[in-house]
Length: 443
Image (tube, rainbow, N blue to C red; front, side, top):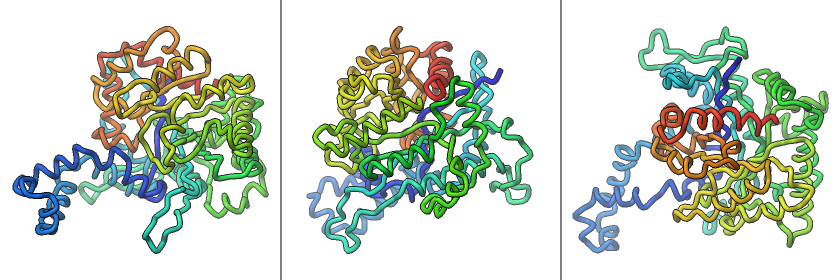
């Protein structure tokens, strides 16, 4: 029997995907700690008036900031290094380094044969940023179609090629045609489609569901859903122009079926889970939820006060309380939803987490993941504290790769910390990384 390790919260992002300003202005990119580190390199200037220092020593300050980025901001440079790589090689690179260290078998009492990755696409869409004072002051648009094309190009490359050490050029890697069957590859890759209902009208949302999720309502078992998704891996080529002009689906209406395992929602970009004061917008989210219930499509929603924030109302929209009216509606109480990041609040408060745990106690299809919250083994002590009979079967492992490189040395290290932490039992680890996510994805 194949033993699968599930990473339910994963991102394939290059620098073209997010709104770059939203990326650079994340709370975890420029932090008090990073400013402190720069300041420590300028001790004589810090004793001087700050305004005067900037005025009289601009070159010195610029050089020190560059030195910090070059020499000290290792994790930030590591993140950029991964995001600067061609998307085609993303999964191949992670596979290469995981195989090199045999991560899945470092814990003698736990071993897995495969890793299931769920890359979550984020619908940055038509961002409500205004670049005031700039000549090019229209908010940039990033159609999710571009991400769809990139993710499936990376998936196709992964199942058709592999990378190995270059036979001649020391320290370089070489791309070669793989001799492995799909079944022999380390990864199974099941993306989630990012949707922000504000970027579409109701007919366009209906078209998206018809395009990417036809026939899901007919899947009767976990095995049937899994088999159909697995059958599409690596044999679908998606070009951006085909996605935009719908060339392939005109020839084959089911060309895009079973490419996505679920839907990703991202409130900090302006998505409102229950816009009761906007009838047209409410109709759109109601339709989306009803289709997810009818077709048993799992939903992952960003639920922390961090992330990519372009809406001035990001905090209110991201609060899990926004979902109480959704789940209290009899039509949507069976919505299968994962509140990502355990409702993490940068203030250290746990009000959001308490709301999620309350929802988990009331609705059997509510889950949470601890993605990005556990860069160290000791961080799993927090996860241990919330485990009880109600939650144990609905807590999910997630890495939040590549964003977690801001705190973690590598994907390998993040997985290793989970497998080795003493704060969770082996049965907890198997539940969170195998049994629970399999039910969430395919059940």
